[in-house]
Length: 187
Image (cartoon, rainbow, N blue to C red; front, side):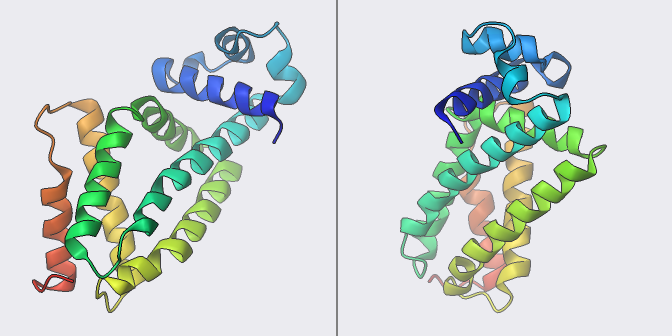
């Protein structure tokens, strides 16, 4: 991906995360990027190609954020819980616009099978990467447990984005889920 495409897609994420899908137009992206009219349509001719590009960029940025979990000793359940909690807090504060954009494009994907396939592919990659971390925590069924953890995190994010709580504590929910799935013994 060229620097210009990255600039355009990051501007599109900003439009999507701050104004919603209705406002995601080529012109709005050009304006947000501070580029001449037509810059976005030169790279992404159709709305569908723009949406696919935006989704790809969102997934790349979120997967990069997830890789911070790979730096934690996976046998340290408390450390994993703290790192996952930090990630959730970051995605709901500093990464709020990115997370709102992801939620908006997920709704859009419901009516666009190509986006659904793109999401499914990214989810397969994330599961292939993260399931060994969950196995190291002591899971007998790491893929299923990872899917449950991802669902919890997505729900925590959705709730925090819709109803911000200044005392948001994702670690407690994550620790509770891990104990339920993996047993009480700390890793």
